[in-house]
Image (cartoon, rainbow, N blue to C red; front, side):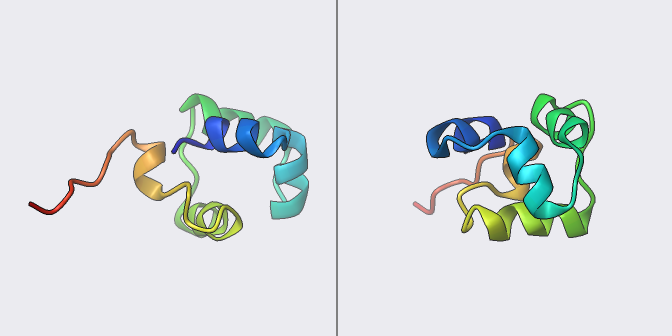
Length: 68
């Protein structure tokens, strides 16, 4: 699930998740739009904060294949 969809489902704004992760609203907005990719540490924080519902692959628009 991408970050924007997760935030919408949770009713959380970019500003709010930014405050919780120590990021500016504009940084989160750039991550949502794909204008910039978060570094490994921030990526890990997104994954942790969303309890794994948003993954690194979601930022790169990559979906894991299901095992056959």
